[in-house]
Image (cartoon, rainbow, N blue to C red):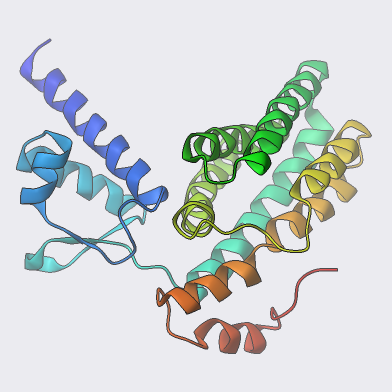
Length: 251
């Protein structure tokens, strides 16, 4: 392996590890990213770290502070609501396209990913403090949602949806893993089942509507936790939600 290839591999490794730690909440919102400390933690040079951090800025996971270095990007109610809106628009269109264009192999992929997610959902429900099960659930949950839209012929739509989903995972991890909280008054497994049934029935409009409701149901609980934890200013979300007409859960 030549020096250039080795350098690229180290940058990719640092990038992927840092991204995973930000999404999983191990590096917390607005945390100062001190290169000297990160060099030790990730086992790479300062130059490699700066390259990786610059890449993470493009992913909107890291912010530059000019000459003062880098921070983990802060979370905000505005971003959460905007992210929810964008993900809903993208995923509804993608699932309609997938229902229209998907074949039997696509159906099989949806059913398989749903089966694997169901197994992990049950295991995690029985052991909610098991971090390894949460990580497996996240992987299978991501695989399930991506399988649902995988038959969409639009590569750009799937790319932007992947980026939005990555940001969404960050908020969910802060709620489920860092706070060790669970959802109230809802059954995500039943919501997933209804979406699969609509997809297999080739009802794209119903699948899109159920997907929108499923995505949006978490927002109020997440925001309540983020306000109580001090990650956003108290009352910030409720004021924003009231003005935007978002202050209630979908029926």
